[in-house]
Amino acid sequence: MSALLSLRNVWVEYGDKIVLERVDLDIEAGSFVSVIGPSGAGKSSLLRLILGQEAPTRGSILLDGSPLTPECGPDRGVVFQRYSVFPHLSALRNVVFGLECEQAPFTARLFGSARRKALAEATEMLKAVGLGDSLHLYPAQLSGGMQQRLAIAQALIKRPRILLLDEPFGALDPGIRADMHQLITRLWEDYSLTIVMVTHDIKEAFSLGTRVLALDKRRHDPHAPHRFGATAVYDIPLRRDETPPTEVVRRIEERIGHE
Image 1 (cartoon, rainbow, N blue to C red):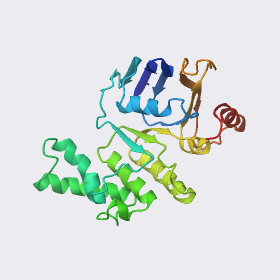
Image 2 (cartoon, one colour):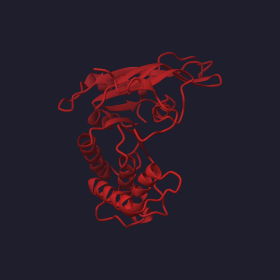
Image 3 (cartoon, one colour):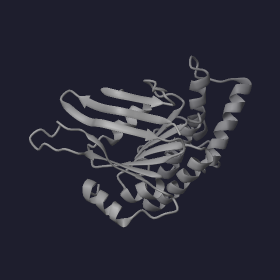
Image 4 (cartoon, rainbow, N blue to C red):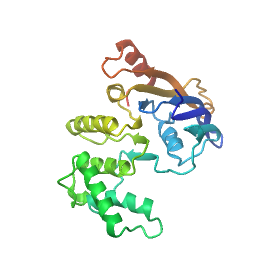
């Protein structure tokens, strides 16, 4: 089976600082990849590469065998830790906005039957994330968990093939976080998504992912800390109906520490 996303000998460098080095990954369609690692290990840089916000200094990234486009296209959606929603728009208008930009890039407005169709799609998406009763509320009227649900609806409205999650639940209370875990698992299954999620929470990484990638530096130079970059030091496939081996989790905790 060919990979949906392939990274080949990818490096990210800023001047003499190496953030990532020799990253070789194949990500299959339908997988849920959890990315963990200590601060500064290049987790967010990896997401930016996949999103298209940043190009590798060296190496190549392929989507379905073709070079990844240098900008974020509709095949990739992203949800950040801080709720990336428009405060001046209602929940419904926040989600419709993505369809307006996609279908009418010069006017960012839809009219007639196209607008009615977009409103119906956005309403169904908000219902799917549990905001069916909050269509006309503004972000300031929503709780943190509800705002994150709205951000997920924004990301999914254009039916991306890959959903990127950058510590999306880190700012939420434990109870709300558990609800969001259930939500993202259901959406991953219902929409046949491929998910790449960065998290500092090792337990979250193992409970949600079908694969855990641990990024860290294989080599360290205390006299030149920027000389070496991070790569995947652990790559662990998981089955959702099995508990990961305690010894494996312990080794990763020792390697990357608790954040």
